[in-house]
Image (tube, helix red, strand yellow):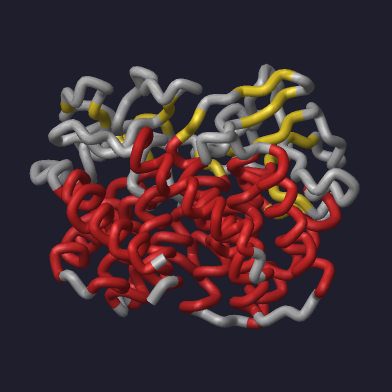
Length: 389
């Protein structure tokens, strides 16, 4: 594993982060919004609220792990762009999209976006000790709780217009349906609150994290199949038979991180973490070591998605730490080998391919866009650098 640690550190510091550092926009701030498959840069592309927060998190976390000043300098600029351009100073919250100059473009507010604001500002505070960042993280937390949380069904409303009137949840739904509740939002609110707790260990925040763990176990996790549900109506009825393998294994380690962070002693939650990992290991790993994407009813999507491989490696290594089962160590090594062979873009000025098919041929998708950022693969590297010290 020492070899893997050295390799992922090199991948982060010599490949992933230099790629994104070159994409800083010196004129308008933030990171340029699009690089297509052929590595053509569009300096006039829109900049996403979610990816801006994810970039801020990446460079803040990289500085905390390595101490390299250039990462903190990048984080400083990203925080400035986030607070001045992506944050709505009139109605609060982060915009979905701004244009290349930082003007509001799509002003809808989504709880998913706000959660990444909490996440990134918390990490930036831990890196910089800038009190303004902690205050913004807390402000976004209160915005989520005041606008999003519905006590009647113990659920978070997800999508709103600029002035926080609830709207149909278009941006996080999929598969031809509109879902009031999405598992994806819940695991990332949990992730955000967990990190905020490390910066601000308030009793009220601990209670919210405990409630999220309760929701995940009792409403989203299927105890008989050990899969997580993906889309629900407002009464927590599952809307479709879909298995999202990457989200499940990602959820496994994010849930465990929350358990450890608030020091909650609940054997049922611990078992959920382990059972999800075993289930995905047994169900969705291919012979080439990769993790397939998802299954809808009986139709299996065998696409290999960049973030799915990265999160699976962390999730399986976390399961190894939890159980000591060498099976998970073998899976982790197989995933890293697969990523090296198929997902990492070896072209000059490349980063990671978004998706490859069953034969390992990359799909001609953007290398940079509002969903393709430095967060999943950067975090994979940082987690292994921390865990394998």
